[in-house]
Amino acid sequence: MTKSITSSGALARNVMSFARLLRSSGLPIGPAKILVAIQAMASIDLVRRDDVYWALHSAFVDRHSQSELFGIVFHQFWIVRIGEQDKPFMFDDVIDEAFIECAESLPRRLAGAMAENGLAKKTNKGRESREQPPSVTWSGSERLRSKDFETMSTEENIMARRAMLDFQLPISRVPTRRFQPHASGRRIDMRSTLRKMIRTGASFDLMRKKAVYRHPPLVVLCDISGSMEPYARMLLHFLHTITNDRDRVHTFLFGTRLTNVTHQLIHSDPDVALRKVSAAVEDWSGGTRIGQSLASFNRKWSRRVLGQGAVVLLITDGLDRDGGAGLTEEIERLQKSCRRLIWLNPLLRFDGFEPKSAGIKAILPYVDDFRSVHNLDSLSEFVEALSSLGGARNRTGTNSAGME
Image 1 (cartoon, rainbow, N blue to C red):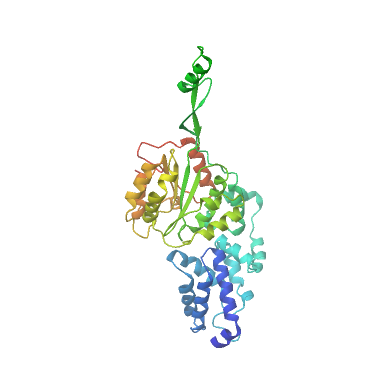
Image 2 (cartoon, rainbow, N blue to C red):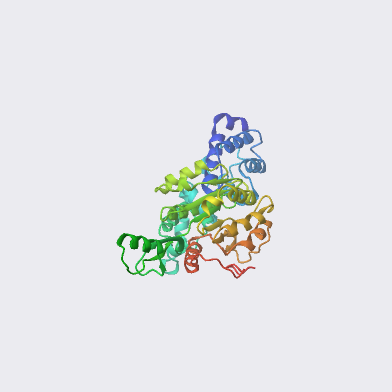
């Protein structure tokens, strides 16, 4: 059976279709992994379901957090096909009544991906029969705002990105060292006064000046490792919006290395901007070396972008593959170089969150504000809180999450 399916090309076509479904569901799947999966499938006994599962698992899954989603997609795609001697693997036949019964419990992103690939046609009738009247359901807008970015379907992703276009980051303007002439200014402009006196040779009122106010620079350091990828991709749309809404916004992405994507995000079209970002970044969905990335930023970029009281947004879950090595020194240096250091962590959405990992413990004492960012509501709350804080540093030693 293995030889006939391999020679006919049906196996390769089904593996590629399965890989597309995994990629649409959120797993980082590229051509290299597909080739490895095809080779693995060609070298095992396809009659044994466990062998097929673990062969594909070894090819497509890089970390433990991806295993649950892989198992769900595997069950839905290859349902009851393995072990049938007379039928080849057929893409259109993998969905049956078992899927209809559990379709609503699937992750929304997977359900959307299956709909895009034509795999949810048989589920429409079952879903319609279980729909509740509009009077007892939330509105679509309210439900979308509370939906976790990681569990959003493709359609919900698009709607959330549109909603982000209305967000503005209201960091208050701060006084600079520059002054400008002003009739009611509080400070005397001696230079202008003396110049006018020399020109006219007569006595007159003193010239006055006032401070020039300007938004401080905004520096964003965003984690793009595997555990942060769903949130990083959504937040890049938010960062694109604020980059095009104000000046002096500097964005850096980091996983195992640091990449400056400020120039790429300047493009007015978000799709073009994000394509340029993807082309510039080489470590999407990899590991995380927070300490090394911050050291690179402090060494190469801090003096260029942290002047004039910059506000820094650190977007990461704090899970560091190096166990927090060197992180304490680098985060302390970063905190001392900026006006305010704000940490946005999607893990804070859990009620039982505790700072247990070494990376989180190293970062937490040096942040001025600690907030969750996992859906539109949390992002909106962050924007409102930042407006009330006005960009000033909290000197009490306690962050907004109530942790010392």
